[in-house]
Length: 229
Image (spheres, rainbow, N blue to C red):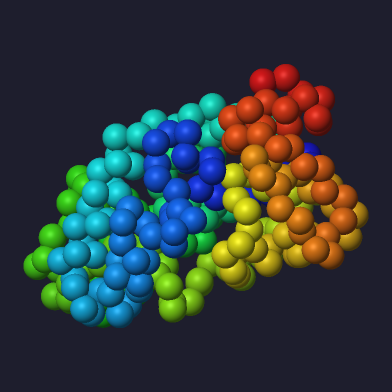
């Protein structure tokens, strides 16, 4: 069975009402990203960071997977599918995708500030000051912040190297190290890019650009590879 590796970004979840990470003004929901998505921001104003992610988490819990998530999940009827996502929501899983690697963490989980290996599912949407891990250390969002390492990038590279087809959906691939994954495929591997404003990918061959939003683009992708949805 052929392997499709699907690399997704904010454009997949935008149609479910999940705010994209940041707009052209460089702000995320009105905040400078360093205030709410960096170790420095956490040290400077923990309450602000907790509140910011609580609102994002509530938004994710209330959101539902859209047609793009569902069509990505349904690819498993025809292929061995691995999803590598830059998104921190769980909409791929809720749509039915069985193998999902989160590059930038998961908003429904929290972890110890003392021991990063202590990761927990959060019951509900609110993480509060004083919520502690088993080592009596404050819990923080299980998110990769600016200035932190991306521990899942090596497993993601290994998966991408095995792809028979690479499908990129809803990401302009401007954020590294995730953007570098497109260079990990074997030479000659077909690459499909679904994005309304498909950017130029330098040094990459065999790209088919589908300039659509994620849901429409996934319908087009099914047509391109000759399977019905």
